[in-house]
Length: 266
Image 1 (tube, rainbow, N blue to C red):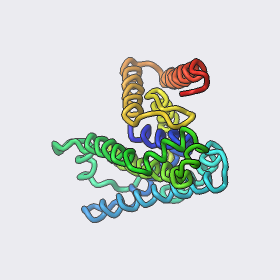
Image 2 (image 1 turned 180 degrees about the vertical axis):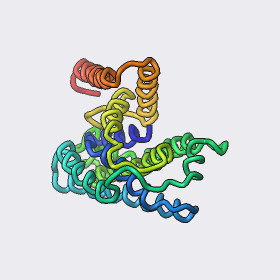
Image 3 (image 1 turned 120 degrees about the vertical axis):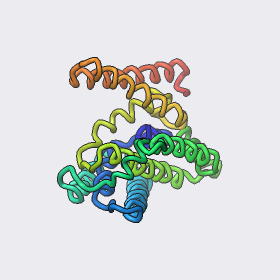
Image 4 (image 1 turned 60 degrees about the vertical axis):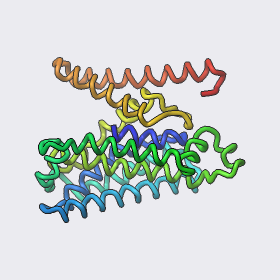
């Protein structure tokens, strides 16, 4: 769900992030190698991951915006960079995740930390969306030229979308290391395509300017439920990938049909 939200924030500006899965892997590597056994170590690791998320978003958003380069090419290129960083930090799966952190996120202590985290992210997005920066993000994705003509700072809007995405990926990394109990420089790849499928399935447009975070979260819920059903039904993982790809194709097809039926207007 958090990965779908991160992807959706970029798609709302008309872009797409093909480095999302590798960024998630890098976040798990950072967290697993910096978390100590005490609360101080956890707070330091969380702060470091959030700062790294902001840095990732600033770098990619700036290159895309100021270089006027296609997001799909830039994020694909940076996926190799972040992959190298993740492997440098943590060459093999491992690291130290305190048991207290895992228990909190899993709800073993009676507090559903993961659920609370998702709700807080949705509330945070709701507050951000209603600000001038949030409205600028939607306006830029809908029609960048018109937004610029009306005084919208489209440079800031585009960069802020990637910063929000980076922050959300840091949060997703926290949830993932709590679940695994370690970090893994290769764990994020499946989340990359699923985040795109979930966002599209939830009504977020590839063309930008249209979509809601709650829709992306609902799309992630549908995909995760379907994967779990296939898994517990004993269906081979090969067919699971085929089904996920089929979902993405159908979701994109439905959006394309709606787009052309409306004469090219969302």
